[in-house]
Length: 80
Image (cartoon, rainbow, N blue to C red):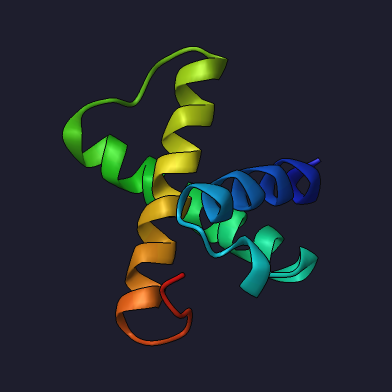
């Protein structure tokens, strides 16, 4: 289940950040999972630990978008 949700989160984040053509299935899953962890860690620091499923999904996508932004800044992805 983690791989499926991670893939969806990574895919949606790659569409938002316009890196979809540069990322394959494996990259989407990895970015989705690591980005979700990053998003929930930041949300916990800010005090947003509890919420419904939609809020958790938005936090996961936000974390994945942030991860793609960081990866783009260090040169892993090119700006579209």
